[in-house]
Amino acid sequence: MTYPNRPQQWSAYPVPPVVIVPQKSAGAAVALEILLGLLGIFGVGNLYAGRTGTGVALLLSFWGLFWVNFFLIFAFIGLVTMPLTWIAYLVMGALLAARAVERHNTIAVAGAQGAIGPAF
Image (cartoon, rainbow, N blue to C red; front, side, top):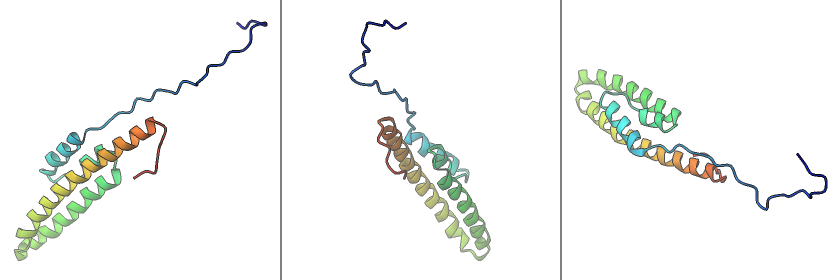
């Protein structure tokens, strides 16, 4: 109800909305990447961090190189290259997942504060 003789009052400062931003854990992303990487499923840590393209690329490229190395086993070259490929993907996937979570959390905090910059 408005009163006809009362002047309109405005607050001095508008109240900014409160945004709750879910933070993701870098430890969880690395653990997912390593544990599932032991089974040959790479890229899950990046999927958890929201980097779908990187996660799918890691998964598909590993399996493509796996089959190349499998056929190289018959020439005995694959006995060296297959474990090296697996170790490289295990380390690279974990590092990429940790960086992806850091980027996600940085963008989420900046977005909550109203200062969203360019996406990484």
